[in-house]
Length: 241
Image 1 (cartoon, rainbow, N blue to C red):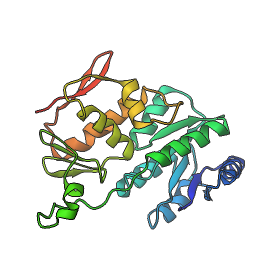
Image 2 (cartoon, rainbow, N blue to C red):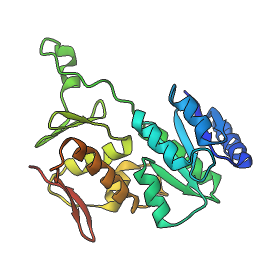
Image 3 (cartoon, one colour):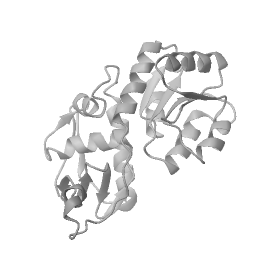
């Protein structure tokens, strides 16, 4: 297992998290600012990143955006002393998977780390099925087809109109949950339970940020995409086109 990266300008916070994770047999590596971490991450990503938002020499938001420009799968858990809704939304929309406010309980953080690692599943390259390769035929068949959307559940790969869509694991699971029953409305709570099945701390309002990111990524290849519909006061649904 590659190490878990802790990026925070407060040394005591880094040491406290490292000590707690080491007791759970998780290897860790520490960085005091975003610039130092980015220098390493652009060559090799860690297993998971615990990322403070307010830091000198590249803050957590900018570092997260850079990470997501080259890696959509590494789990990112934000840390911040600002416990307001705007900060949470900005953190998640920049590419984070989860959010913990300072001060936090170490038990809560470890629970979130475990849940994020359980969700993590690296995809293989998207390859067309070889009709002659009967042994791998089932593996190469996409699991879900809904209009122009194809979701390969074996390889965590999504395409829209034959264009690969780079979703995080959290985004993948939310979209998959909607597509399993096209036309049915799913509440925010249902979507977040699908994305974080083992985490009791998730705020269901985070679903809004994840949905925005899914829409934005698909709209890059298709500006007319409108299959992901908001239902005011309830949640979301995916409409088969």
